[in-house]
Image (cartoon, rainbow over all chains, first blue to last red; front, side, top):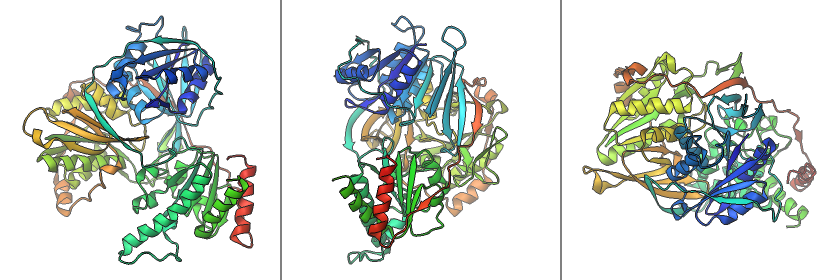
Length: 348
Length: 263
């Protein structure tokens, strides 16, 4: 079986889940990494060190900025059974799931009369390319309230992998291999005018540790808001003080800050931090829920977390049903004290 | 400017969705407009107001999906079209994209097609991009803000600039219209249906287009489901940490977490 792995990067910084995709591809046989961009030799070298047998590198000033059409057309030309310049077109193309790969895989699948399966949490391969290759993909649907197994009848199969669902291979420093330059397709319908910076620190998708706040973060009775704020402004001010405590705990653990839908809807924190149902499904090793009662969507969103710790003043809150450890208490006392305890124990 | 907002009907987000006998069941929970698509309708209405345009709501689904279209009409869409055909029961994302593209072409003269970022059911979020590719139009995905060049309204072609919300921040991208746009929540809170809007929607005649009307055959699904599973249930063995003081509680809790080796 011939497998391509698309290495997703932003300005030369590879998305870590790209290496997870490479690790999965290697478990099926040889893996060819695809690196698109401008001056991205370092990404190509890293792909070899993470296990790629070879790299196809489309390095062109026109690919400096990610654009769906140019990247998809470049991929389609390489992967098409009809036009591929390679000895054999791929049976399977794996991607990490990111905002870019969802588009690029979707478009290229249209070009090649195939389709894409996104957010895979498991991929089972049986048979081989020459006879009866069968690929079964497990993926969450209904925001992880259910899982489905699907199979595609078309070739090549495009599959995007959910971050942190597959093991990341060890980096073999200094491992080398063949890097082959390939043509970029540069016809584009869009122009990139610029960028503005992120609002968040560690991305929730990649985070190994997430500390989340809910509606409860605004309820600190001992805080006195500054004069001149109306009720809503005072509530948001209090919530921001609460999220500062959440953020300090996240920071000492090297984690990301998340939030419940209730906290986002109340305007306490941008929606990009939202975990669950209409926000994000996350898969951290440790999820600490502060002042989150645990609505059904939120519980679905954190189902893939390896361990949940809940801090809530209501002993009957549903969040305790999915938690490994719980503290029934005042988050405004517990969270800062826990931050201090970890600072000491971790020597920070 | 002629705008189409694409929507879907899904089980309410509060529904307890389960696998029962190989099928998805949501009990007696209501079917509603996909929450992300309310943002699509909102984004479309903002552009309608900015350019003195019109908004057509478009949906693929069974007859009952007219209710989701009525929600879009009540919010302020000018008209609505339901694409409904028994042959569409098992379409996959690319099949849906081809049918939507055919409907857009049949509507004719469309400047902008607006989608929500994903649906709550399948959740793959690829149909907008695939529709753009089938149409051969630019894709302006995950827009948190849309600006149509005001100077160019009335002349042709119009251009649109969007701020795409991506992992690393925002990417500002420009394209000539017609284009496909998908929106994220920063586009703005969806407006509530007005009283007049609800009255208008309740009386609206919504035309139904079949595949025959669109002049296309049913796209064969390339991706098919072989199994449907409930997620593994979590053991509910919470250990509540207690102590005389917050300091004692957090000391115990931190040790427990460290012993789990998740840091």
